[in-house]
Each structure stands twice: as structure tokens, then as C-alpha cells.
Length: 234
Image (cartoon, rainbow, N blue to C red):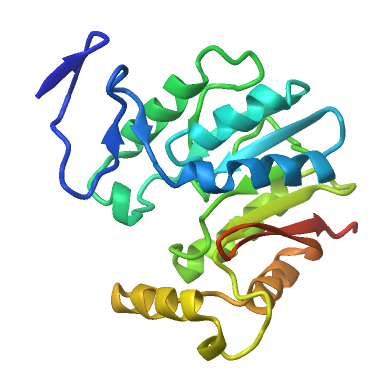
């Protein structure tokens, strides 16, 4: 056990992301820097100047902190999904994830306290202008994928509510044999019991069932893309 900031932490297991050397509440994902500038650019391009955003699967909190510092007129409500086990958080509770997010964002006035998000009970403090789901769909179960679109539809504004989803999507719709990186990732995901790389068309089909239409595709970095969806007005 390790004590820091008045709390006692369990020693890290080999699957978990490392803790920050100066603040043990914070987890550190070394890959965040690869896409954070792209995420910021995408949000700037599509969000209104003043907006409220619900983050689904906020990871360590590094992404939220980065974009919130730059988008001071955007109010962020980060959230983590209890029971959603990624390889890096397989043995970690949602409390550990929420604590890391809050630690990164504690000095940012436009970031609310992180939530433990129950897909059967979405937060009532909407409607939000946008829902942001970073690196969520690839490792999510089919039920959770559907729940994301269904829940986002419920908490977004009726007029032009936006849903941003990022991941290593096959946006070209060709055989993966000519996309070396995605092909390798596809097989690696399947070897660990996942569906593999999702095509943008497959995500579009889920989105359509949930009441969304894709309005943009933004490249982030290294075969990772952001698919931007708008809530269908009814």
C-alpha cells in the first residue's frame, strides 16, 4: 500500500497505467499526446462558442484537462463507465478512474466533478450540446455500443445535439489487407475476444438506429479518426 494526499492506494498491478510521480491520484496514459491536439481541433470546429459537453469514458482525465484549458467557454462533465474494463483498467475500480480525472481537472473552473455513469441512468443535468466518447466503441460490448447512442440521444439538445466518437476506425471501407496497421490491430483485438476494428459504416448503422446522422469525419493521428454525428431532429 502507498499513502498520498491523505489516501491509501493499492500498489499497481501489471495491467494498470502508471501513476504520476508527483501526484499518485493521477494515472498517466503516454498515448494521449498523440491525439489531444486533433481532438481539440475537432471540438473547436464543430462546437458552438459556448457549450456543455458530457464526456463518456474520460480515461485518465488528461484529454479533458487539455481541451478544457483551451476551450474556456465550454463546460465539461467527465464520466467513467462502471464495469467497462479496458486492458489498462481491467483490475481498477471506477473510483480510481474518477479520482484520476478529478485530479487532472481540479483547478479548471469549467470542468465539473467526474461522474460514475450508469448507462441505465444517464445524468439529469442536461441537455448537453455534445457527448464526447473517446476510444470507447472499439472495446465496448455490442450492448454498450447501442446504449451509448441511445443514451446520448436522450441527454442531448433536440436541435443539433452532437456526438463525437473516436477510435481506430476503418474509414476507407476497403479490404484491411492494404491497411497494415489496422489489419494487425484487427487480429490483436479479435485475439482478446473483441470484434476487431470497426468500419465507419458499421458505426453509422448503430448511429442511425440511435437517431444520429454522421456529418463529418476528422482524422486525428495514426489511423485514429473522430466520427461526428448530429442528433436527428424529430
